[in-house]
Length: 375
Image (cartoon, rainbow, N blue to C red; front, side):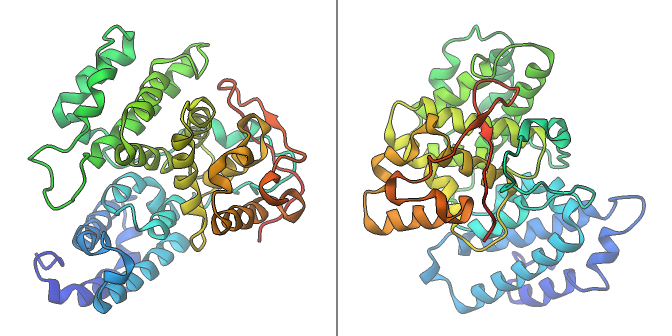
C-alpha cells in the first residue's frame, strides 16, 4: 500500500489524493449509505497513525514538513466538519484513540461535529434547561468498535462481573495496574498507560451506566459505574488520571445522553474530590480545550460554565485559580467568554446570578446560563 507509513516521501501527494474533490465526496456519498465511510475512516486513521510520533513532540520540535502536513490535515477536517459532520460524529472514538493528547485543536474538530439535522442549542441561552432538551435522552451513534481494547489483560470479563453485582471488591484495587501498558503495546508511544484501554473502559462503563439509569431508579452517585470512576480518579497517578479525564471529556459533544451523563460524572468528581490537585487537573483538561482556536464542543462549554457558575463547586475559592497572575488572567478571560464581562470580577467572579438545574440523573447539576453571549 502507498500509505504514508510505507512511503513517507509520498505523504503530501497521498493526502492530496484522498482529499481530492473528485474522490473524497464520492467515497462519502457512495451507495448503499455509508459504504464508503469505512474506507475513508481507514485512510484517515492511516494518516494519523503516521503523524502521531511527530505530533507527540513539543511544538518547537516539529519540522517544517510536519507543520505543513498538519495544516493540510486541518483543512481536510474542516471540509469534513462542514460537509460531512455525521462522519466525524460517528467515528469520533477511533479518531481520538490515534490523536496525541497534545493535538487539542485537532481533537476539538472531531468533538465539535454534530448531525446536520440537529439544531444545536446555544449554550449561552439564559435559563437553558439541558435535561429538558429532546435530544438529551437520545444515544449517539458510534460506528467505532469501542469495546475492542477491553481485551487488554482480560479486562472485559472482570469489568462486566463488577458492573453486574459489585461483589468483587478487589476489582477496584487492581484495576489501575490492569490499565498500564504491557510489553506488547506500542513501545514507541512513551506512555505508562494503555490509552486505548482507558478510552474503551470509559465509554463502555458509561453506556452500561446509562442503561442502568434508564431501567432503575438508582441515582447516578450510588452505582457501580460511579464507583469505578471515583476509585480510578483517586488511585491513578497524575499521568493515568490525565488520560482518564481526557477520555471522559472526549464524550462532551453535541446534545445526547452520553454528553449529559459524562458532564454529570465530571462535575461529581470535581465536587467529591478530596484533593485539590485532582480538581486542578479536572480544570486543566477542560481549560486547555477552551483556550485553543474554535470550534469548541457544545458539551465542553456547558460543563465548564456550570463549573465556574454554580456555588456548589466553589470554583473561584480554589488556590489554583489565582496561584499566578498569568493564570488568573487566563481564567478571567475564559470566564468572560463563557458568561459575559458582568459575571467576572477577579478571583471572586463567576458566582453571581448562578443557579443549578436538576438533571434527572441525580444530584449533579447541569448548567443554567444567564444573560451572556458568545464572543
